[in-house]
Length: 390
Image (cartoon, rainbow, N blue to C red):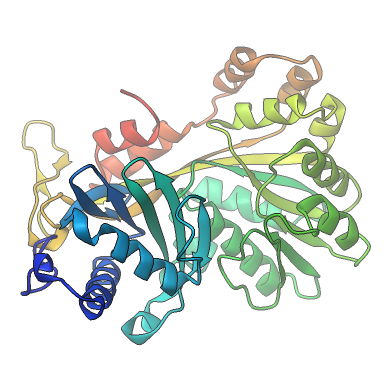
């Protein structure tokens, strides 16, 4: 099936409201069938461009007539429970799941934003994936996996996960919590999330509503009086949340959270920039886990280059002629030891921290990914993209 072969009937023939209902439903169904993580509806001066994000890459799917743009966005707003008469403000909502989506999709989130050419909409799709439930299924290297399990077995400290949006941080956190619940019974496990993305049996999950009275700091302060042993905060976004999270790690709690940073060293420095004292960072942080997702070579069409001995992308109907299908994890973990703690206490800068890591033989993300090249799972080009190397 070609990417733009969404139906035998041309979308250009769409005229009335019933046709728009069909059009939107059909596009969302095809996105699910394709395994797209996001569906973009992007208005231009002359048309409405529909794109699917497949394995992290945006692919144009359809170009709809400009005359349909307002009706398509209005239909999405109806599905998402948004205000159809407000076209001048950003809005966010949730689309109720029905039909065949029930089998594979757990959530659909809608975000609408005004532009000079009309409203832009993005639908994010969240899938059930039983193959990514446990730590052993995620694809960490044996040594990193063993280190992660050691941290999960502890009674206190903070593990920070870093990486861009869509790098699998929530999946990793959920797998860690399931590992704790299954192997260390009797622990009280509580999460604070905005929003709750993955349901975890046995954990108390709390959803923080944007702009509501129960903020992350407010909820976290109260929860610390609820006798939790393991805490997961969806993201450390500000200095107040960071301060409470660090204090929790210092007072007998095992805490997991995410933070926006490109590198482990960058995450540690960001805590210092938020006003956390160096001795608090060195005493509370157990490790920083940095991860990315890279595209996997399509198993059906990949071929071996006889000169290099490495596998390369080709392209076939199975992978929509991209040469790739699915994604796989690459990661690096920095655990705080004496040398690194000494550098943090001395308020070392980024270059100095990176030098300390390099001198101690730290395996960075690029090096971790080379095992996947040797196994014929991905390519150097994909690793370079994920690691920000031109």
